[in-house]
Length: 238
Image (cartoon, rainbow, N blue to C red; front, side, top):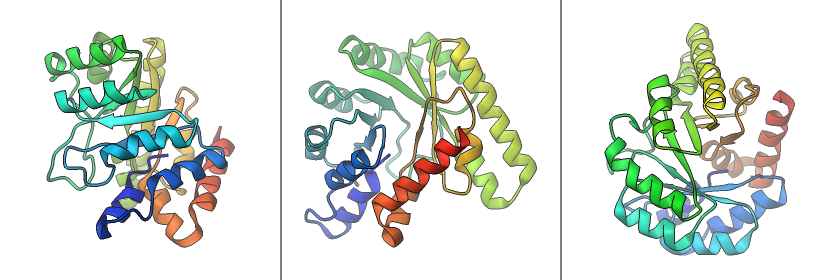
């Protein structure tokens, strides 16, 4: 689970409540497999001190989402999370708008990816489900790719059944190719109770990262109930 938006709510008023660390503890208690936290350049949600507290609070692996910058590299090396997922980042965006251009940014990404890997941090690249980007991830020796499922989610909002299926098939095809290339495929962005099962049913996908929707549902039913229901839907699809 991505706990960023627990921190977003906290930061809207300042102070310490609600604490994303408490969210991490709840996720651990109800069968979550890991915690994702995006430390943005503008610190709009997760703060620097949250990382250590999250790591100390649970035994769940921490996936640090980060931009490909020297500042974030230094922070990742200092905290040594289980994994670091390199994502595109623009200050003006409300949330991540698409996948990383791993093909076009090879020379920028290469030293960061290699430095992380040399220090025992599992490197993931958040990319579109495209063969060109997957081949770039392979050249960079990334252990993991996370496919951006935003287009799939948007197709569902439009009610375009043909587009939904095309996007699902594209993700499934690239997940299979990733496994053939010995890269572990994950997926995430815009996943909900209503659209998660066709993605969770793709056998090659090893992990789904879900955050904003669960935090929104937690406002109405509580975080424990929200996470349990999502986990049940995913397990049923598998």
